[in-house]
Length: 232
Image (cartoon, rainbow, N blue to C red; front, side, top):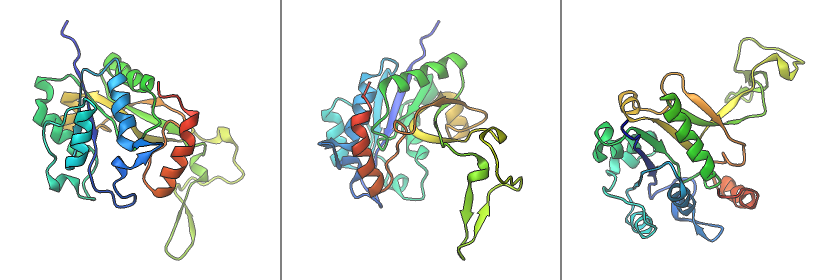
């Protein structure tokens, strides 16, 4: 039987609108991207690891850590309106796509608290089921809790099936997809242009491990949470 070759791709652009130089900003004494690089390097399931970046600084740092950056990301793939999966797909195709790899894993550098064992579990589940697997964390809320806030300050439910004075058993628990790790068969992810196609499997992680840094507040909270999560 042909081995299932697994490639991990870390998308890390140089510019960040909300947190300047986010991927290279020091997080507990090391660049934020360090924790994702180390997690990938310690994985027992990843055969190869690459970083997609438009930054020479990030490229030099990643290569010094032992992670390859074979191509610089085109500037047009680093614009704010470009979804984060696009540079991953671009890198995957340039590396040879399904002619070289069976499975691809996306690892966002903004999730420094993910565990190595979580990444390996997601990869193993994807290979076992031959389908896409996404990390997800419980919101601790039901759909009846959720509201939108209009420009005039009014609160609106997001479901027409509104229930008041509800109990936790009145609706399914809600989960939030995270960027800690997503894995899928290469042929499928390239065909659908996303990791979130079809009916993916979910791998549940706690809200601390799933913490994704998008704002300055996220960054500060994550540094305080870091002592609670072992990187293994």
